[in-house]
Image 1 (tube, rainbow, N blue to C red):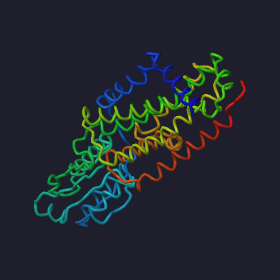
Image 2: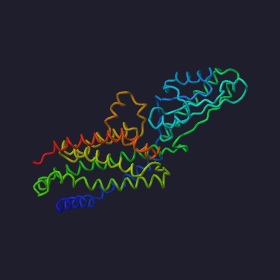
Image 3: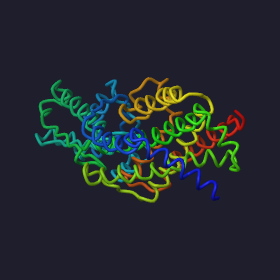
Image 4: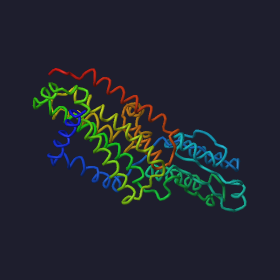
Length: 366
């Protein structure tokens, strides 16, 4: 144990002496959470929507048909009452629910306002704002075409955002930045630190020490695990205090999910280190394999539902996609562990696969 702790201490000293590494590890998370939290917006396609029809008349059927005919919307069916909306969003089965008040068509016939409510999941505010605007424009077009008769101008759309009524874009990007930061720090920096030992020829000295190779690799990853915990705390503090993004769910559950994702990222970093031989190659591999896919295919910036089917399938192998989904469910929607089983199982399976392959490929002789 003393030898292991000595290796951990040595690795901390290596990191602390390099101010450029410290700037990346500590400064980058702060910069990214501010930039992404304030500066980015998105658009969406393939919007799944359901309907609650308390009126059950011909006019509401035509409004639903008009929405369904648009290429942006996919109608998944009717639900019974508004109590089912929350569960529908929690399960990720729809992004929008259209609610028609009772007597919708009759009110139009009596020259009375007819209200249709658009309920969206505000945990992804950019998507929610855009899709409700789409629906509002389609309904307005429906009225202008005179499909409801003389009283067409009396339809009054009402918009309701669950989880994020103020439509803050930070609600969307904070989980994405957490996934990006943890992936970069744990995977990229771990792979570079291990490859650096190979490149300098010091890995032979480490392998010749009394410490088993497994503990050498573990000692390499411990500092980045500690720094990741610091970054998670700093991101959450900035999110709550600066961006005013609440942590609606369990902080312990959020920490558990983050710990699982850190395990996946560290395992991936070790795997990269077993494949490449130079620091430049490790950085390029990490950038191509990790950074760009995380930003483009994880749902951090661009909605996965709007991507071509091939890219949607490809995104399923990106660990950050499942972590970002889990963080949104806990942090923004306040869901319990039962709704995160799928994401946690997938992440643990990925981590197990990466570490198994890494240990098999790791060479104890150079």
